[in-house]
Picture 1: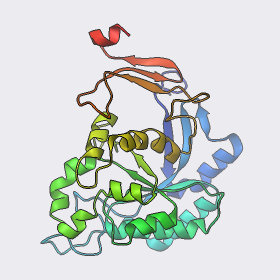
Picture 2: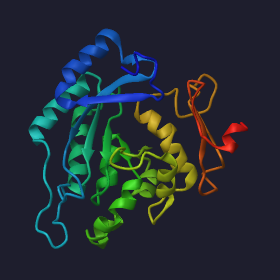
Picture 3: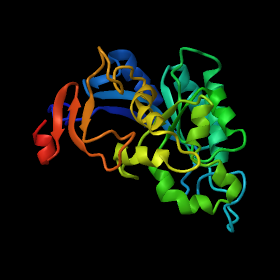
Length: 280
């Protein structure tokens, strides 16, 4: 409705449930991905496991003092069949996987679906919070994006610590993944976490597995756009979409930076109610 009324002030790359892959593929085949200038049909998504907070994220070994190892959210055979079919239809597949075993299974499923077909879009593992010893290698082999949310590290830190030192060291492994060549697409996971990219960039820099601010900025802009199969946003370059913000400072070097103005396709869609913004 917002799109039709011309009131959509941001771009949306929409995913449908994996079970609906046939309908999504048919829609794209018949009329394309674009529903409008700011709304695109992306791909399909499914869940491999649950969440860390509920202790349903699937691990190889039990949670701390509790005996459980988490839960599978989807039957493995059903998941593989439908991912194979969606991937063969040239749809991007996103698999939610948080625990180390779940991330490995997601990689195995996506690797099997790709089968070295270079025309299949690069798929996504959503969250990839906790990795096994082979987790980084598995993500590389699967040729997926690691779609991660740095602010979850802030909220989940006490829970991560309770996993024990060995698993904690392989959690939110931004630096290791970046250095290993796994493409990062960073975001917020709103409305579960705060949607502020500036807060998320600060969180991505923090800790032993933090990345430098330049990489965090790129992963939140160009990296996120590429994970949405979009070459025209996320960068400032001739011919790009002119989606941009005006900031009060450089987030790579300064703290407490504020957004003053926001533009989508070169049109201002928001201005901060501040004296500083009024002078721009």
